[in-house]
Image 1 (cartoon, helix red, strand yellow):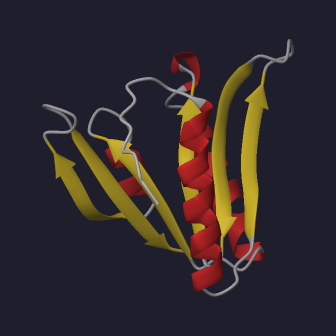
Image 2: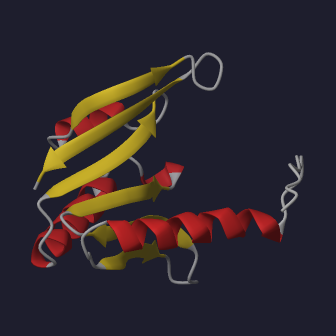
Length: 138
């Protein structure tokens, strides 16, 4: 069999293929675990998104991908309320831990205030910034 290495500098549907293959490999080699979306949205009267969270529960873990609060609503406890709802729902689903990553200009103090502890950080990411990884026992 002759193999050909191909380099692409564009986004294509082909990029989904390795991701699907590694997911299938991972599922076949780890213990069974349930994965469920956990998404929370705050909308105004017109249905415009003002705040929200995109996350999933996976085995023992709540994995927070995004937590957003619009500029005009920040500092009013909305992010805290969304986080508490997500953590409560996660515990009901059997989760014991939570995981999130955040940039130095985002929500470091917010997560620390809610009991999250730094696990590690990427310095000079992507060039001069910092990206922090936090966990919390629920």
